[in-house]
Image (tube, rainbow, N blue to C red):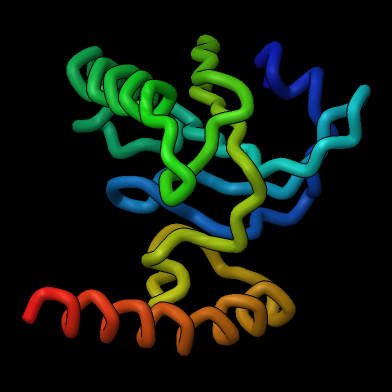
Length: 141
């Protein structure tokens, strides 16, 4: 891909997770080439989207959601390291390192087949997610 962000980061070959609506975003581990700062690179390949989503309206939603994330500065919200960059073929955004999306932690692998090593990492999170959901449920009482 000819995206400017992708020239600044070293990216692993193996997709580690998927995320976003429909799990169309592909998440990869990476690090900044100059600083070595670890990160997660989120890539939305426009050609991989279903035809009905390859519309300007959908792309505008992606742009607006990325803008909202950038404006949110809270320790419990995903930290953006590099804002959304839109190329001809893909959207790319860089965040602090993440292990997987919540959907993947709950064993939803709709859009990719993770390696056994990746699945093991996700399984270790399943209990944490379950406990966190229990905390939320108890907090709502």
